[in-house]
Image (tube, rainbow, N blue to C red; front, top):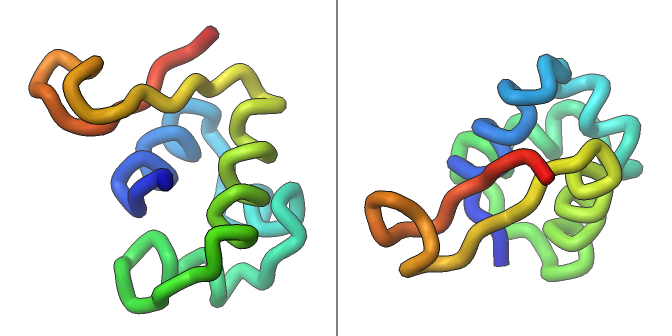
Length: 77
């Protein structure tokens, strides 16, 4: 599953506000804010909706071990 840091980073790379990403993923802005800050324990389906919204904008999620520092990351297609 994607991490809050990946969500924040991908959103920043795309220049999206929380409100814009929340709308694309079908979430409330408050819900997305809580997920990004690690204050919520979202369902897998919610994380998948965020991931799909970002992937449609050409973000690729990189798993553990495939990133420069060995942790999960993001990049453009």
